[in-house]
Image (cartoon, rainbow over all chains, first blue to last red; front, top):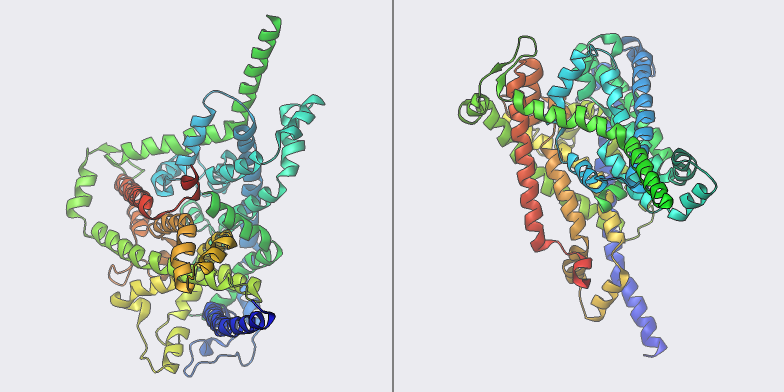
Length: 288
Length: 303
């Protein structure tokens, strides 16, 4: 093939590819706009005068921008309290899940004991069980313990591991070379030191993924708080937002301000730790 | 002799420590999973409101559900229609988006974020936003349709358009599936495409004969997760419609929740939960069984 024909071919190829790329961009941009419209609507509505939220013709841009909507929403809904409740629950669950899941995963990945492989299959099969099957008996157990209307039913289960996170961490531990813990053992490290000093520091990326997904699950949880909490002062943000809607169902601007505030921590977390979000989804999809 | 005893002592010690490691999960398994599973099954044979002692009624909860419960049939129908529409639509959209992103377009990360973010937000806040989007008067969706000269739709307020509204809303959350597909697409070896090109394959033929088989395990995963997820819709239906109008959006788990925590028919709700489990399990098994025909595992061929 002469240089000339090669060049002609390359030029042709570039020409041929171009319309595809333009179409792809068009599709992506249109898709993004569709995807962003609900956000746009939420944020702009949160700054509008209540009479303008559903005005005809529609007001696409708030006129004037009422920052005071946020102050008023904060007055009507005790955000600080609900946020504090949510933070307490989420942080406790986070610690509980990181500790319990990593320890259990360590046991399955590194220790030899009779029945280990069967138990691991049991662990995997519990992932198939829909939460609705155990929901009512677990509710009964917690109610009998006198834990109704406390945070305990929402936090304590986190200390007993979660099948999916155990699985994820165990797979990660399996990729860490055994030489690492053998060297530590020869230096006289106990099992717990191997777990705490050798494996945990090695597994930071996997732990970060577990932390993020645990945070997301508990911050966003609605059914749990709905079932277990009844005192208004104990509400989480998700439950508080629902109650707010029931009380002020006509004040859409405040409702949108409240929704924006509830979403904000997750958006910040996403942009701060995007890598781990993506990684977590990928691991769950590829290995699951 | 003493060496062997020492070794067995070490093994026993390791086993003991191993059980200690998995003890948190074992305790949870007994008290939060296996125990409740057994208890739930027993209670599904009882009439039980959690206040008065439970009363054994045999299989009558199940009998009522299958022969004399309009809302059970309705909720199963609603959920099945939703799953049958939202799952394939969601899979097509997420695969299409993933393929667009896989063209190595500039700004790929930004697009990826835009599509993925809705999937991580709290369901309650998302539902609030869609409540305003779907509002018949002045809602953003009808406003946009107006620009295209399409008459306004009643969306959530009419039995005919309420369930389709949920399906539209579900498409907003396709970002999770998209990321899984994207990972699948990126792991397809480029040599395969090059080989196909040498054989004279066009774009469609490359997609049909290289991409699809290579990502079929990912499709299987997304299909199973999609089916399981769509049978467990709760928050959005609870907040947007409470199952209405009529019973047009009475999703199965919403009905189960109402039976348990609104009408306090706990035994009945346990029976509903077991039926849900059976349905999900059956669907998963059917999908897995069928997958032998359409999922391509590279390792299989090598063996």
